[in-house]
Image (cartoon, rainbow, N blue to C red; front, side, top):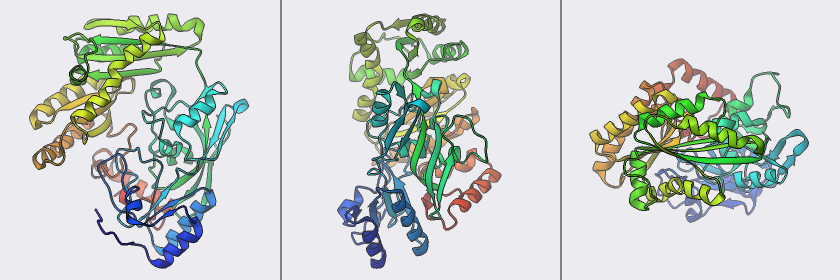
Length: 464
């Protein structure tokens, strides 16, 4: 971490930045520090912070960085958890949060055209006025930006039915690392001309290009929704239920999971009336036409029941829905209270391997002396693995590092992947070669070179 309080950029560069951004430029150390971290525990002091408002500013800034040999990291609101928005020390940070003036809903074509600084919540509200929504719904929707959602391919609970940003984006306007303007995709839901550069840029974490506008595919709002809570004796029973739920014709629009440790933590934090023998919990939502949603909910209810199921409760009023979600919503405050500096990973395994994953995590927790709490998107096999520790304690930090290494080994042995929606960033960079072959890494490096020949964008995240 760079702790210098002096500007790290040459004066001619600072003058050029001032000419390009005017008052939308931060150069004082105290101001720069606020843009030197994200929702990870990583931080570094940038050389300057620029706030773009127009596409042309982004293009000109990248051309300047190429001429001067400068590094640049783009960011939205900094809600990411893997350090992808943390710059190299002394690099330029380009904040896109003020690029929020374009939010256009084109209802006849079921699409939205948005700037990267528009928040997910603002988009949902605007689309909702026309009877639509954009399926990706991260937990941080109130503050996270569309640009960030696209950079990470952040999805949220609805992905189990409606897919991720990759499935819900039609096209992009972007600036490559070389400073060239690139338009990808179409305004139509079908199109196979050329390579799919749209899906390539989504999830690339700002290492290939900076997105300055997105054309998003909208989905009609469902007429009705039903919420169920199912409680199980153990993870095996819950996982069998998940397999049954995902095999029947009614796809839930949310299928959320909490393990025994998560339930115990909620019980300690707030008594929500869960039975003492509860070993796993599923929150299930079903949506669709009003005339059919009750029948769909009953179908899902029958699939959720079975051996090891203690109860399945169907909410029939808004108050009952809120009551069922209280358990899940109480978990995050409980985690913050117990371990505010916890490690939060988002691994994914095939649904059939969920029991093996949770059992393996319990074993690793005991072996390394690190409490682990698991919850997440069961329908995708996407589990948030939370290692509870005090990173300021050297012994705990060392134990957690060894435990995390073993967690990733377990996930890959089960045929899984190291990230479902949080991305790789800096935090998982050292583990890339465990999942990707040398050939894949070589091709990725080649693709990056085509987009960014001088390595300007997020060099800390470059494939190695």
